[in-house]
Length: 299
Image 1 (cartoon, rainbow, N blue to C red):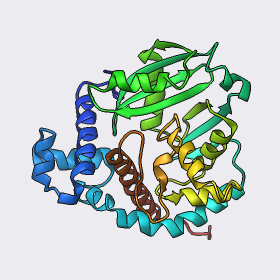
Image 2 (image 1 turned 180 degrees about the vertical axis):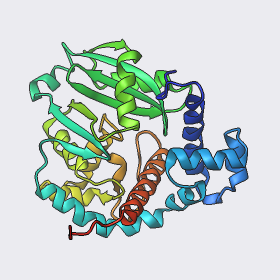
Image 3 (image 1 turned 60 degrees about the horizontal axis):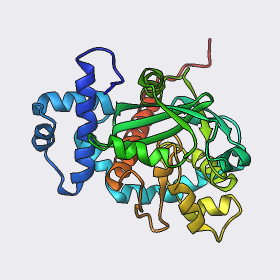
């Protein structure tokens, strides 16, 4: 299994933090102690606290606090207004995710109808904060990103292959490793291309997902209204569920109208962990902005 770090020490640490995130997402209702979480990943409480804070950006206790659904519900009203502004600015063109610039290209309806015939897809499995990531790429960009746990690789690959039954697939982890690093350790200068493989309706919904800012959530009904399909919330939900590039196209940011988490293709604990991860990062970024010294306008 490839890691996203080159040195021998940080690779195991990165995998441990991914395991810790999953553990907390699955047990947050029990309010796990620092000792229990540290034991789950085989570290001392002191070492675990230090590593988790370094990799995630907040303490384990703060992360558990972000895992409550009440926080997500409280963001709905504020998040919708931001979504409106983003969607009103247009759905096409590059989108921003964290510090990552995404360039989007979609297959034509004819290409999609051919089931991926003539398309070569390279793939690789990589460690990430949410378990094991299956990254798939064509010559135009990332066409698939899915998640699972150790031992689920074959099922993950079969799931993604079924979406393009006539494509040629090659296991090429050396090619996908660099892109995986950009996705999960983005820098301001990084650019990743996306190759969307879907129907025109699905792509329209996925483009709307790209407009949801980090740390915010919205509802299926809101997305339906913004793409002029107010009575198609269920169809929007189906298209969201068929999103082939999870995380980059943030379907995890969509909740039910009551603020509840609904089905997520890669598991509700992982969706909950993604939302908490982003909320924690957004909180840290906001705090950093407030702490920046203001420069005087007087020379």
